[in-house]
Image 1 (cartoon, protein in one colour):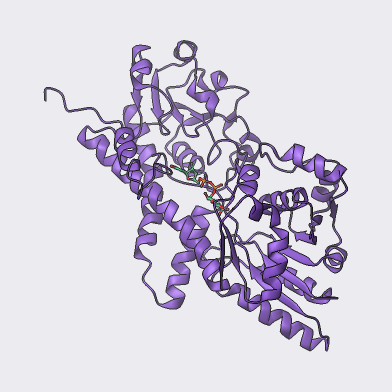
Image 2 (cartoon, rainbow, N blue to C red; image 1 turned 135 degrees about the vertical axis):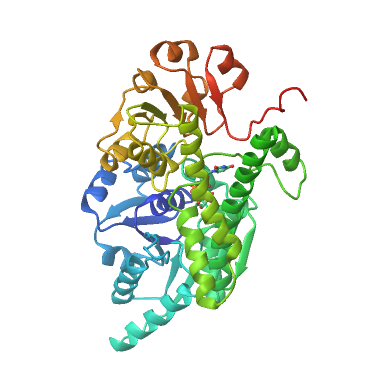
Length: 445
Ligand code: UGA
């Protein structure tokens, strides 16, 4: 049976969940305190770039299954299931900031008018779901009210840029749930996924919370592993792509997340690895592997700066650097923790002028770096440049017109941190080219 659902928070996770849950046939109210965002959504405007979401939004709003409100209380009172999908940003000390979750819990307590399942989709440290349960009990007691509820941990595994696809085709659905009643409700909410045989992992909330952190930390470690192997391959004259391909043929390893690059970024891996280290400290458990991953990832970004500086003769003073790609990966306008931020900051500090282009991320980037010239297309960014850094794997950069690029650049130098281009072809056009981990056998051997 379909459910009446309220999703609190219309950020990336919340909005995709709201749209997807409505598409499963549930009646969904999505709420947010941001009036402009809700007004835009009512008019069919998605507040971020995500391929495919627009059609689903329109379809479900038109069918009457999806609506938007700033009145969180009303949304909660009408719902049988309340999803918490607010942000849990990292703080200075690495710990997740739970203040938005805490605020939402207060609002839920004030509007708990019948049995409800409270589902936490936000990424939260181990023990948070149990704290939410206890806090709700305490708030009800303080208000001298009685209401039944269950708390379920339901971490999200969406990738930005593939979020809509991932919502409808998850590898698994994790549900940290402790009562039969809430288990039945969640089975109804996700009935469509059940029908297409998505594996459901039922566990306690602590296990669900740690599955999320462990998954993200493992992927971050996998990327860091291949980045360090790439650096070694580069030094030793080996080719990281062949290495990654051969490694990936081992079913135990899998070829996914073995693409070397300038370091991982985004709103999740950097924040979640930091938070995991903090959690380890809190429980007195060694998380040295993850700590090393974090350090090595920072070093990878700086390595790109050193390589580029080396290619340009060791000094960037008054040089013009073209940067293609600012977002932390392609198919998003998100620049949070993008390697481009640290790399561009270092280029500017070293005295370079930066001319940049990105198909989606320029508005966000220019707010951070007003001194960077944001260009209409890649050739404007390349015009007069002493070298170019390719930082994001946008498809349009894969087919860069090298003839045209060579004609507009002052020096034909390319640092391709995503290995998008064919080194032989680029060199044939007269460029000095370096990728990541694309070593060549030492001369004469
Ligand atoms: C990540 C996880 O993949 C999702 O499963 C998870 O739900 C999400 O975090 C989250 O916690 O919300 P996302 O941050 O959108 O998703 O992006 P990814 O596709 O995982 O890429 C993260 C970073 O790693 C990017 O900077 C990307 O360029 C980099 N990356 C990825 C590599 O450098 N090499 C690879 O092989 C793969």
